[in-house]
Image 1 (spheres, rainbow, N blue to C red):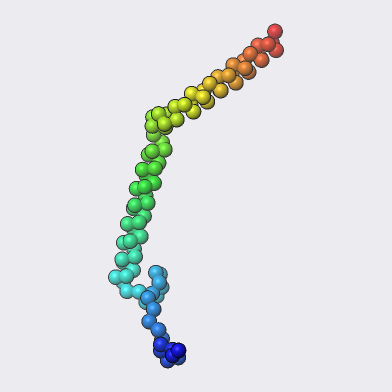
Image 2 (tube, rainbow, N blue to C red):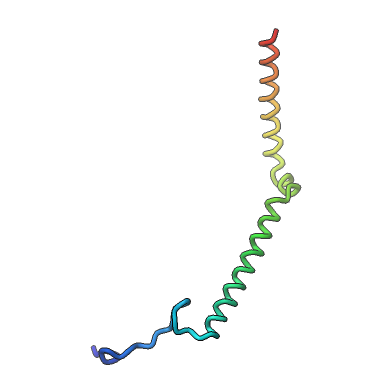
Amino acid sequence: MADPAPTGTPQPRAPRPGAPGRTSHEIRADIDLQQAELAASVQVLRTRVTELTDWRRQLDEHREQLIAGAAVAGFVIGGIIALRRRRNR
């Protein structure tokens, strides 16, 4: 098998992002792409934060768990109060 180019002849390669030798147009295109990706990521994050901090929606979605938690907390607090009253007699 023969070499595609004689030894010592530089082979053209596509520059990797951030590598020297890119044109200003390529750099600008990378910056624009990164800005667009960042804007999309920020929008997704804002949407997610809004969903997670919407307490009314969270209440509706987790109503059964909240009721169970409140019942458990009520029994625990009631038990503590009953034990204190019994000790104070």
